[in-house]
Length: 140
Image: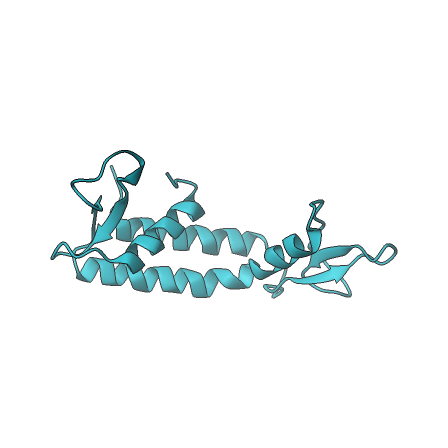
């Protein structure tokens, strides 16, 4: 059975929270950029003095990659999950449904959007659904 847009948002919120909880040691929900002791190579850690998480990026712009990983730390899961839940509640209240952006569009321009009970396209809902699908690994 296909999930409604609101159900997909709630599933993404739950997945975020579960994945974040599994990545946390104790109350260390925030990750930051640190450095290895000897080489001072930038890494992402959950504690600069006694890390239980240490992520090293081997990329051309490894400092920016590390900053991105630190930004997307487990602490983000709860507020983002709450945001998705609030949007899902609004979708339920206003008959959210997915449809094509325009009947005269075809091929790659035929984009799916989320609309309310009056058929009005809600770009905020569409962006939320796109985000949820990336989180769930179902993005088209």
